[in-house]
Length: 165
Image 1 (cartoon, rainbow, N blue to C red):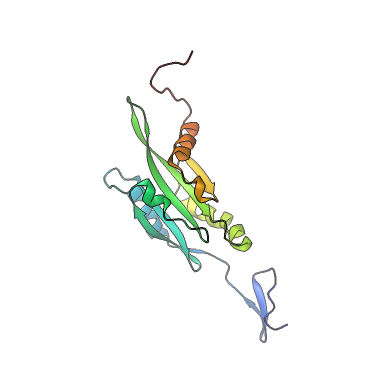
Image 2 (cartoon, rainbow, N blue to C red):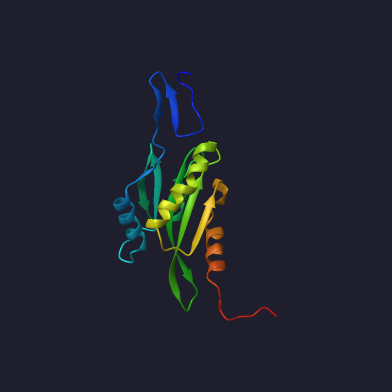
């Protein structure tokens, strides 16, 4: 049975069963620092992206601008992101935050399945957000879609005060 892979977290080799670590390592301090940077009003950082490097999740990039944010996601990877968008109307402006889980269409079944436990760990760090989205197509990365989700989550939407009759 040399080299046979089973559905558990162990595999068989000449020396018998061997445990394989399925745990994902998360650099909590690095992720928390990026999270606080996005939340801060004193920095221009609008977003942070957290990607898998081997069995670790790390902050791979932070930046400004939605187009640069959208360009960070490819079909063959999975990632998490934290995004700040400005909402409001002429009377009131406020920052709102989104937590995004990205699973590219070319990601395999086992990696897809593992995302739910990794997401729970990330949400312990990236705790404050108005909307959580799971995206699986690059076509879903549209600013209008994100804004629409934030408006829905915001409850009352008074707009400009002009009513449609």
